[in-house]
Image 1 (cartoon, rainbow, N blue to C red):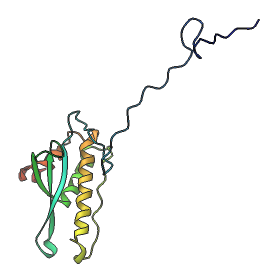
Image 2: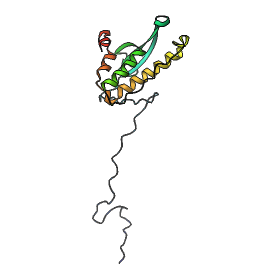
Image 3: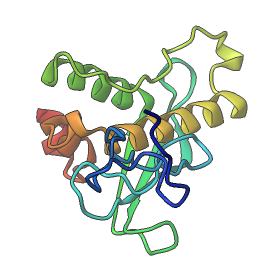
Image 4: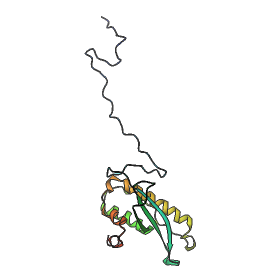
Length: 170
């Protein structure tokens, strides 16, 4: 005996009106929106709005072996708003934050910050090097900011503290 096929039935309908199609995978989340530094936008671990961080205004202090560069870190509620907080940090302070995060959150994958490079004295504070470091420090901070495992780390609060004593004691 041959069975007949109903041309009006859906392809995977069963005779009792159910479906023989196995459930598919759950819908996936859309891929994150990335900014010009390939950093996810609006994905703060805290669930609230993401603050906009920028590293700007490098200022060279001192001369010769005592010379160093400070970078200004501005915190804004969004890219176009006025600054709500600002601190100045050296490149070595960013390295300190990286090392402290590794100690505070063992097992977490900490965003990288480029290592200090050995340079000849005349190239040590070139505009190219200073700009390269500025961009890497900004990228590093933005990635730390959205990293869910680093949320609430004490070293981050100390790093952004405008009170020099709080930062020095950390």
